[in-house]
Amino acid sequence: MPFLDPDVSTAAHAIQLAVAPVFLLTGIGALLNVMTSRLGRVIDRARFVERLWHEFDEKAQTAARKELRILARRARLANWAINLSACAALLICAVVATLFVDVFIATNLKWLAGAFFFVAMLVLIGGLVSFLREVYLATHTLRIGPPQ
Figure 1 (tube, rainbow, N blue to C red):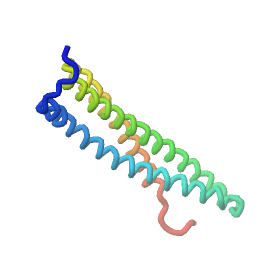
Figure 2: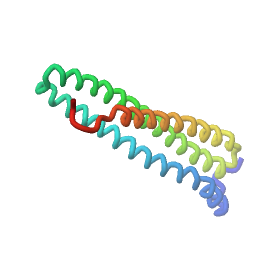
Figure 3: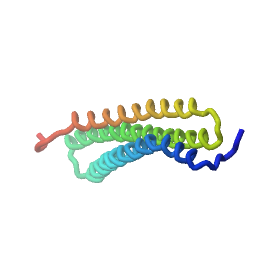
């Protein structure tokens, strides 16, 4: 079992294998940026409603209570989306590391890299589903116009 093959073509091959997962990491990073921004907006809105709570009459407090429940649900969904997407990114990092170990130590870990990639896709799907549910909830509870 040869350890650390110094051949330049071996390094070039390992880098070629890692390019596609690295591009996927970039996309997941962009998604995480959007998801964390949405979570931040939900938290800001909840804090705003809570800060004005004492100024509301009974009817407004009822409406605010309903809005806070929706915001809490949106925050949970956004949190799941972020956590699952971050786990997918970590699994993609494991794919890249496994590919490098496989090439440089001449092991047969392609099955492990494939398994990591498959699980990463499942986890990313879960994150995107949570994100879509949060967006759906946000758009279907949206009220445009003056309060009635």
